[in-house]
Image 1 (cartoon, each protein chain N blue to C red):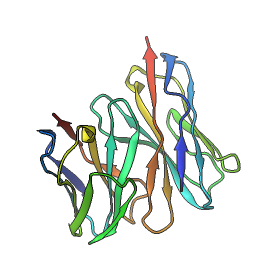
Image 2 (cartoon, each protein chain N blue to C red):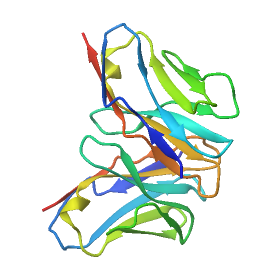
Image 3 (cartoon, rainbow over the protein chains, first blue to last red):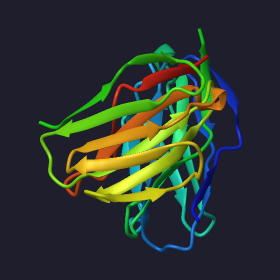
Image 4 (tube, chains in turn green, orange):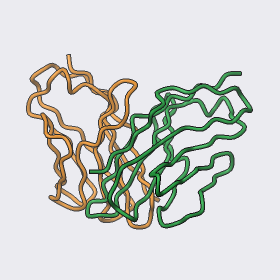
Length: 115
Length: 112
């Protein structure tokens, strides 16, 4: 079964600085999708960035980028120029390409942004 | 455009009472549907997922069940709630036109 591990329960970053959130996963599949979602205090789940496993190029969305290491099964999120609005719970997620397209999440990392 | 409706937003139920949470998606056909539970300050635990009417996959055998009576309707149920069923329940959907899943607003369930 696929599992997602986020080893950092909490992280802090100074406003305008850069922070990296870690994520590792376990799977026997060769093709899949990986995501980072953000959950602010409103608890609405917001997609931050996605990565397709068959693409070697790391995904980038404005200040958000990932470091996807397929062999190491690692998928970290880098937030540059951190803003107060980035403060939230961040979840790493894995979606299977097999029947059912199971979507599993890690335990989350609380990101605090200091002004 | 596609939208997802999840209700109720908040629910307080006594131990031993039944539960029914409903999730409905509009603007798409044959979506994958998901139910998650989130304990306070914790991650999202996948409970059930479905690829079509009547097709339910269970991830966590427990006090809950799910049904999909219509293509875009996903229901989470319990016959007798336990205190441990308290939490924040999220419904999500995805279709073939989208890579990612989209989430409802969630239901905060408190079992007393």
